[in-house]
Image (cartoon, rainbow, N blue to C red; front, side, top):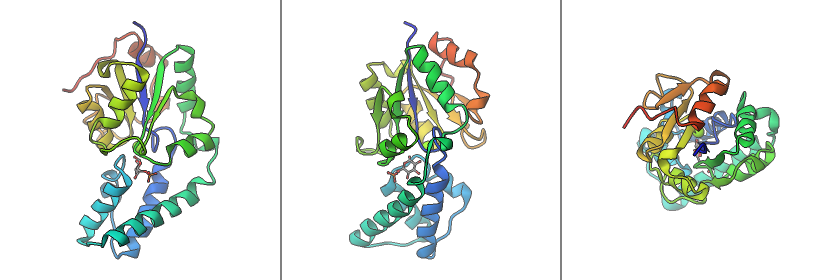
Length: 225
Ligand code: G6P
Ligand code: MG
C-alpha cells in the first residue's frame, strides 16, 4: 500500500519555537542563579515541561518545594506564551508547508507528535491545524520522550503500523523515541547532535521531493535498530 504515516514534532520542526523555549527557560534558570549552555539546552528539547525544570534544577544542584516547582512551571509558561502570542504563519520553518501540501496531495496520513501542551494554539496561530489528520500533544501523554508513547498513539490514531511511520524530529529525545517505536527517524538539524537518526537533514529545504516519494513507496528503510 502506498500510504505511510508521517508524524511531525512541532517545536523546532514545524515552527521555530525552540528558541522561545530556550529564552524562557534561561530567564527562569538565571533567576535561580543557574545558567546553562546551548549544548545543555539540547537535552531540554523534546522533553516535557516538568522534566525540563527537573533537569535545570539538577544542573544547578537545587531542590524546590512542590508549590515552588509548580509556580515556576507556570511562570515559564507565561513567559513562553508571551512569545507565541505574536506568532503568525511567517514563523513556519522553510519548506514545511510545501512538504505538508505534497503529503496532502498524495493522500498520506499526517500526525503531530509533540510534548507541548501549547501545540494546538500554536498550530492555529500559524494556520496549519487542518493539515493534520491527528494531533497528539502534551495533554494526551503520560510519559515524556524518549518514551515512544506520543508516536505510538499517533500511529494508532492514523490507523498505521509503527513500522509504516516516519518521524521528523529536531531533538535527541524525540529521535530516540522514534527509534524505540520502530519508526523511521528523520532528524531535522545538526548531524553531530542527531546522529542516532536514520536520516538527517539540516532543514526541509534539503529534503528532496524524490526522498518523500521514496518514503511513500517504501524505498526508504530504517538503518538503525
Ligand atoms: C516540546 C519542546 C520542549 C518543551 C515541551 C513542553 O517538546 O521541545 O522544549 O519543554 O515541548 O512544551 P510546553 O509548551 O508544554 O511547555
Ligand atoms: Mg522539537
